[in-house]
Image 1 (spheres, rainbow, N blue to C red):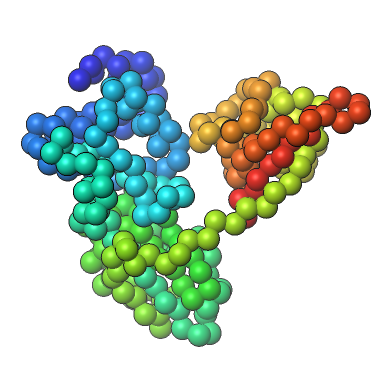
Image 2 (spheres, helix red, strand yellow):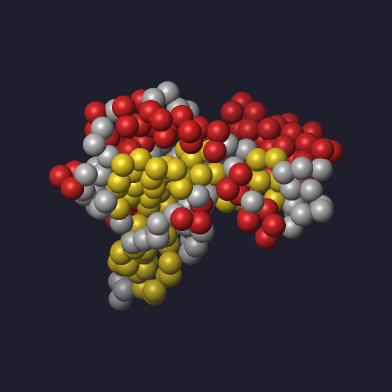
Amino acid sequence: MNRELLNEYKDKDNKILLAQIMDKAEMSESKNKIENTEFLDMAQIELVQNFIKKLNLENYILYGGFREAERKIAVFYPEKFNSVIVEKNLSNIIQIIRIELPEELKGKYTHRDYLGAVIKLGVKREKVGDIVVNKTGADIIVNKDISKFLLENLGGLTRFSKSKITLEQLEDLRPVEINKQELEIIVSSLRLDNVISELARCSRNKALDIINTERVFINFQNETKKTKLIKVGDMVTIRGKGRFFIKELVGQTKSGRNIIKIEKFV
């Protein structure tokens, strides 16, 4: 593989991650076995996908337990396998820690409570995938090598001392509901600062503050250029405000302002 491609990346953390990606792909090919990364966040997934395209690699999948998962592992496999076979064997890599809350606590804990508990036990974030929260508790998608540790230690935390904690396989993951709210915004132009002002429901000056403090991500990449033009198909994330998919340019008002149809993840 052409390791000179790594020189295109100036960010140290990105370069380290992509070097690991290259190592995993090479090991899979040379040792003729499946290799995988830890869980990647959305920005890392975007970075890795673009890099893999440059490497012209085909024998890999990105998987996080369900199609819409935000955190996924990259799995590389040799020629003798195919993606279907690999997906059927992912239980050797990923498992589910299920927490079922007692009656008096049902519906009271959020994603932050579950993630905070895992981190409190000293588990690194990259060992944990998505956390699927429901009224009765949560399914925590984790790297298999920490599943036994969490199974034995989560119950020792006060918040989960009365909960039932079990180890489940991937196929037993509870149904994941992705809730979206469709709405329309009207902007004078498709510049980032205009769109952020409407999505965050704030003044233009406040929108600029949000952009300048690196709280805005376009397709999971941080964006600080206020004149960046937003287009259909973009995913806009505003830390503290939510995630928005630019679904359609509906048209223009009589005064020439742009009407944009948005899907907000709720």
